[in-house]
Image (cartoon, rainbow, N blue to C red; front, side):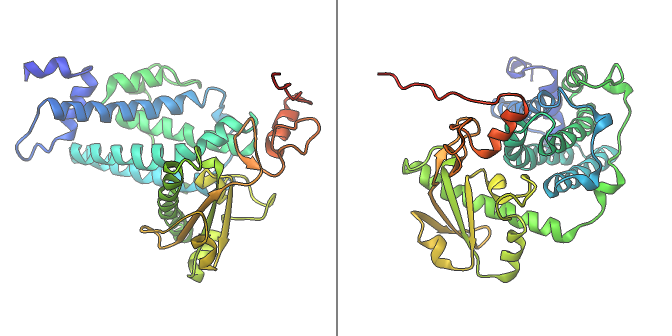
Length: 343
């Protein structure tokens, strides 16, 4: 064991390794195991660092209620309530390997690969006090409050460092803050919405595979350069997806397929030929939905990189889409000169 200590980047990595092993059997340790645990530690730390860096201007006293949140945010708070309950049960039974596995799955699958990936547009593109940004910050606030307390027994130095950097007034130490319970409203069952969100996550996995094919063929770079077609024969499935595909201007700019999938346009149809006739297409292994990807129409917005037919139509902001034009106008930027091309 002493010869492995140089490989351990801090006491928290060693503590995380201890929590990752099943002590009911033989305990294995070696350079590769320590490296894997170090990677897991960095995933947890970087996820929480990302969260704390995006709540610097959030005041929890002015946050909206649970009922006012978008469907995506309600779903994530229900997922947070579930993981919080699982982690508490793991501590009570000293099932540290269960704690480790649940924490890693939540940080990687639910946060990094899903919620936080979608949240970037809301956090970076929206106006400071926009509903879609503040509602997201409310979720980040609760994630930070609960997860920092939850990891403190196994990652005390990381938890303490995070606690000292939260922007709102707290106790001087995370160990003085006490345990925190999820709000009861988060645990109210909504099987129809949860089923729709789980369906969407499967569709998103299939869409990402089709987007990768378009990237590999050098037809697109970012997913925002793509138009996605989804063809669905099942009436129940298309009805569930249609709720997240409103007509332009009718949605809440959060619970919409184009924002969920991080693409510029989504076309939903019962005609299989729509998706199958796209430049790139596949039948989803996860969802069974037919997925098609084409290059998006319109021009690229200089600010959010979304492709839109509206780019170029504004006299004051000819390089921006209508969404970004509204944000810029609200902060007092009333016009945007078009740079002259170099001769």
